[in-house]
Length: 233
Picture 1 (cartoon, rainbow, N blue to C red):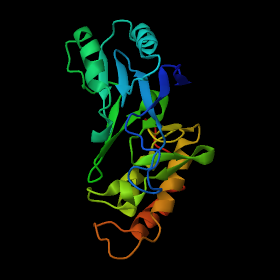
Picture 2 (cartoon, rainbow, N blue to C red; picture 1 turned 30 degrees about the horizontal axis):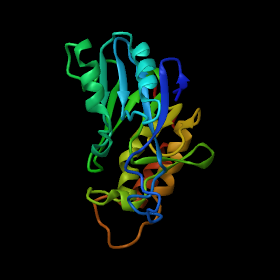
Picture 3 (cartoon, helix red, strand yellow; picture 1 turned 45 degrees about the vertical axis):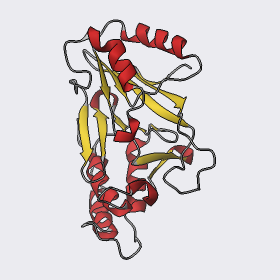
Picture 4 (spheres, rainbow, N blue to C red; picture 1 turned 180 degrees about the vertical axis):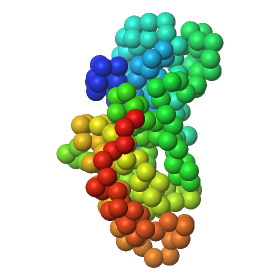
């Protein structure tokens, strides 16, 4: 398995998830593709691994290539959402001795973008103009994005419209790429794809859900922002 280079120093690979269920009910919380995405980013003085999952087949060869890429530098292992701990313990043990810092330190060049109430933290990589997501954004056909289905939001404090409101401020970032864990990444059109996904989810929602955020306010805020250029980072 050879990671795909998105930008110099930014790579993404996919690996089969051991908990994948081929007979999952469509639209359910267990309905996702077998292969999930993982990210490697070379920050100024640290190699960053986000939601890493090692392949079962060819694992040793993959680790050997990863060792070559790390080349003795400190490694930070970051997690977007609690379900994505994956192989972080194995990798923390492997690369922990290379650094005096904690294995989950946020290094310079990486910014946290927490979605409070949605149980996820996205990571913004300004130098690569890339946004790394866990479960709250998923890749859709044709380089598009979509917010996760309602079934994935059970146990958190927002529905899809509330999630759209949380994601809305990110539309102002100069995003080129969005790298979700599930589905294909949005490459080169990340900001437009994110904006479209937020607008779709901010539409009318079923009555009876009240989490302090509804679709119409999020839609109005989005429309106010649509003509604003992205702010520099």
